[in-house]
Image 1 (cartoon, helix red, strand yellow):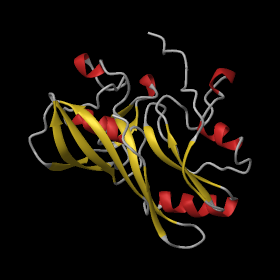
Image 2 (cartoon, helix red, strand yellow):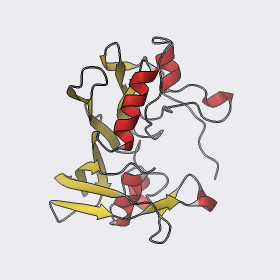
Image 3 (cartoon, one colour):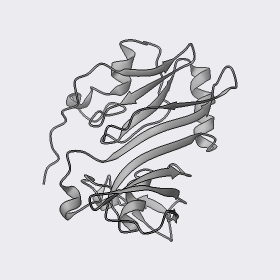
Image 4 (cartoon, helix red, strand yellow):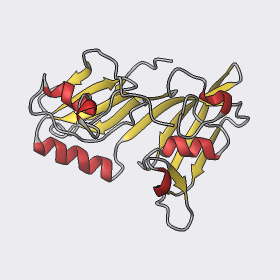
Length: 216
């Protein structure tokens, strides 16, 4: 089955915070973080920001179908500083997700190594032999009509980490076209939102946390 045509939401970037060093934005679901392959996928978050901030530089990414807080740099020095924070896991990210089924525990931890599933890219898979370490903390917020709303905290930054980990414990994220199946697929979007991002400002050295409203 072919992938659906890329049709990102047509809305101006929502700026959550800006200063001389960085810009925080609220990325909508359905918009690429960076350009994809082919001219039809040139529209993306960084391209839209470049019309406002020509000097804008990439720091990290969110999946196409994930919404929420992203940070971009406004100088090479800020980009390096922020990049080092992400690499050293000195940033703190909180996500909100709705998952299939009712979790009985109040909180938990998933520690399962991940590697790309080459024949089925961009899917990732769990592999205890060659996978890279991947760890996620989760906390149950509430049950909602046969589903569970969770706060997810990735302690590592592997591709599709939260999506694969939730599937692995038997509670895939709703609307996940790569890892969910059955009734868990019948949702208008991937129910995963990057709610907040905490980091150290590259110029002032002050800790800062920027959040965005969960749209589901």
